Image: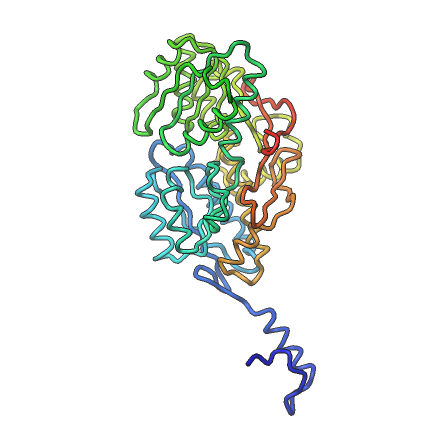
Length: 407
């Protein structure tokens, strides 16, 4: 029988002593695997090798971030043990790495594991093990399903909504559109494609050519030639940076000048636009939610100044023109804040509870007007974007902030 509320006093024990013992009990520390008085263990997978290796900078910046946190004393007195493994953007390898992190390293959670196919491969496993799969580095819409997958949460705006936005924009702005689409042949590509078709609605027939590529393909040159030959005047590129750069460069090389929409995950100036050749990407449009480091309008913004100073001090080898470094820093600050909110209750259940409890939180480096909000029924932290057009050697924002519900 519980006696925590009894009013009688034990002989010889003062009221003050009882109050002290109660406050100690109230503040009792709680831990699951991966957490202790001195450490928080976090798992991560990233393609440091393979077709998506341009995203390897994200993992390197995350490592630098947690190192800088530890140098500053950690979080609530605990150091972060960040274990980052190379999965080569290969789902079977991701499964192998995650099993090691969960079953051998016994991490408290995983954080920002990269890639739609890779996260899909571990989605059910993480939820069956009840290990938080937090702020995944993919915008697939499936990461916001707390009813069926209560241990998985996304971070960035979802691909489906982004696809809808591009479709609606081109229908309103391109006269007599004939649309060509290149798509990575997996769940990542399909999520964008389904959103794009939904946005086109009754005008879906305006897609005159749709081709796919595999991440094992050496190039997408032959696909781009097919798309040009279709007579299309709009080109929607659903590709990771390596293939996005190839596609836009090839279009330029063969003299094809369509209106180009590029998915946000390949909008980095350093890893996609520059390799494509600046002369080939003028006027390309994308959707943004973070400040682009090459956009001079942010040079004097406190968030950008803080990030540049941090990069120079803690990640000097990282490119100041690579948006992936902005992404990594921003998502790491959200994870930092989530862990901070956990206090001394570092259980996996409480970690998810805190992740699902943000109200219009100001994310460093997010575009003005874009904040982080979550709830037990809303696992989409960021649900707004603004369109941007490439001009010269940088992105220029235009139009209003668009929210998912109004897209």
